[in-house]
View 1 (cartoon, protein in one colour):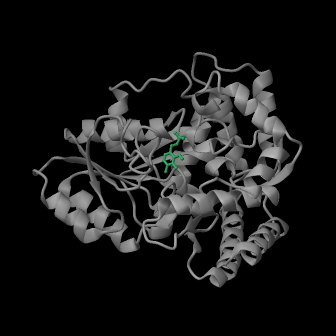
View 2 (cartoon, helix red, strand yellow; view 1 turned 30 degrees about the horizontal axis):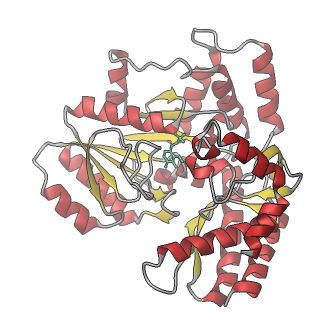
Length: 410
Ligand code: PLP
């Protein structure tokens, strides 16, 4: 309670803004995931890997806009490109030069024959599923429990599927070959249009797929004549060419989003020519699909991105996780950290099995304490590093976690 009261007294402007927003926004918010009790810290500005709140406090930003902020805030290359684009007029109601350049980069980097752009990754997944259904003439879509492919395509959280787009979903357990196989065997023949899977489940808490699971899905999709779709919206940053390149498994289609437009709103879906070419005759519309700011942000992003840049960021993440794991050893399993490279998630385990409420309280307590320490990440414990983080920043986080464990570890 004292930590909560400190949180409230230290962030009075955030509280006042939250109270006023409650009048017009459900829960004072337009992104459910950003809300936490009693009110979220409201930010005013960002620079590099730092955020400043309306209450005048500075934070090291370890959330990295849920992976979309890979370049940090206000990266000069991206800012310059966007400024120039703004001065040349935005959104012409016609095709532009940037979309072709970005498409070429996407195809070369991720081994796609063809690609299309959308405004969000949710939309990219919706379009990829529509393409798979049209291409196969089938209806069922195999997805995995706790998977997240966008707001209306979610199999995780407290109300999984409540608002999902109505598809013939078939939900199997992640990383479980024999259970998935049993489920597939129970389906009518020639009914599965697509298998949609995250090579690492992100929103579920950074759980990596096993190579054998993804190999099984690759083989099974081929045997069934279904389209294998990798959702690499979060994971494409974990290796040059995406996790598919690291696993050396090629899906038929891949969906993207987040950082690939330099922080502008973005989604993309692409893959095999024979599937993507259905869009030569079938409409795929969207006023902002080729919007100048996203296309320009994307072209600028590819000026910065190299295998080395990603490797450095992901190695820093490995160092951070190794450091945190060492500190967490002292609380033997009560708090753990999962993930690979630059993406990771804390997990809290109640003393009693299934004590989820107690876990949530501990999670929020830990979060408040980190906010007090001037480090910011998702209230559910998710972190995404950026290319502007350095050892000095991760040292500060390590020290904050260490102080927490010293004080409250028992
Ligand atoms: N797929 C995955 C794996 C994601 O993590 C997300 C967003 O977090 C999405 C899809 C949806 O992306 P967007 O929020 O751009 O619609």
